[in-house]
Length: 99
Image (tube, rainbow, N blue to C red; front, side):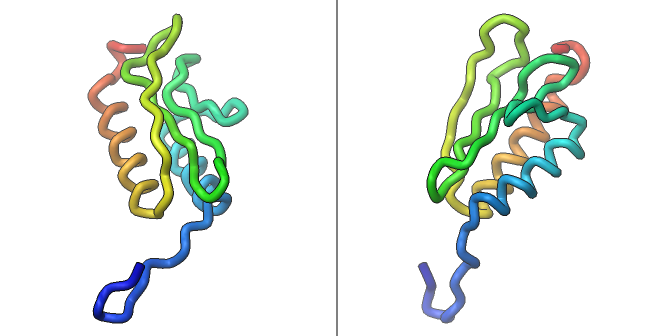
């Protein structure tokens, strides 16, 4: 996937991206429990490597009973950045009232 300028984005490495994304989610205050990231005991996100991509999901709203997951496949570094930004925004909107 290169353009006329001759530059191509770096290849996507799901294992490396998973490690980086785990660090970023911990920096947002989430705790990692076997690929499920929680805040105050509520599941917020989950991640795993799925072939050449990352399988990621984020809850629509924090819930103790049956959270509703929004799943997506992350196949590029840009998609990982977008997922992180979206999750950060959601965490700010939810605030303490949803915990």
